[in-house]
Amino acid sequence: MNKIIIAIDGYSACGKSSTAKAVAAALGYSYIDSGAMYRAVTLYFIQHYVSLDNEREISRALNNIEIEFRIPPGRTDGISETYLNGLNVEEEIRSMFVSDMVSDVSKIPQVRRFLVAQQQKMGKKKGIVMDGRDIGTVVFPQAELKLFLTADINERARRRQAELLAKEQLVSLKEVIENLQKRDLIDTTRAESPLRKAEDAIEIDTTFVTFDEQVEIVLRKAYRKIMYAADEVSQ
Image (tube, rainbow, N blue to C red; front, side, top):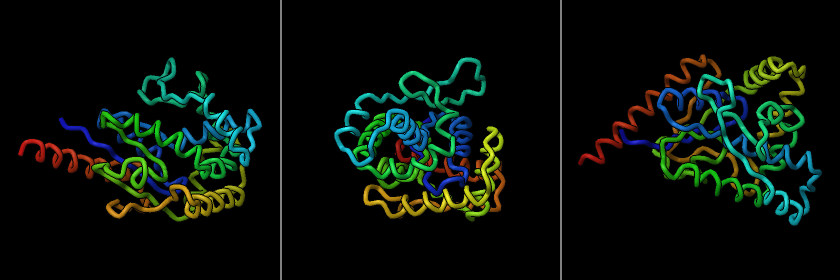
């Protein structure tokens, strides 16, 4: 069966990552969380006190960063986690202190060029599902299926708060909403690869959609694209 690239973009806490993981698992595709890559860089910058205004410091730091996605020992669902320089940082990169800074790091041109190059390399063989904010517009403008997820900000905040609570991080709903609003503003107005819907992307509002319904919607669209790609090859 012919493989395709599925690019899922959209705002924070719209269910991009969880949906992408489930879709990748159902299709037997590789899942790449581009947001986790930016979070990993942010974590490294925080840990090493990298100044976001110093290009030399940023370049030096990027040269010392290696990001991988691996299935950790004991995990049986086939879902990979984020490793930074050999260490599993999946939990750390989801913390609020990283969330508060990730958009500022993500808008740095050096950082975006560094990670986009890695992401494009990962997708050369196709058969991937990647989510983020510029996947369908910058990383894979040739992706066969492009989706753009959105949802009401109050619902997004509720989901993010529940996610943090499950990790024993107590954060007020007001603080979560403010964080999401700040990230939305930075993501949509930055000069380098701003968040926007690709012209040929399909928009999905997830406000009143259950997770299972969300996955089913994407899978139906993916199967159509895969069959279409197979028809094109056979002609």
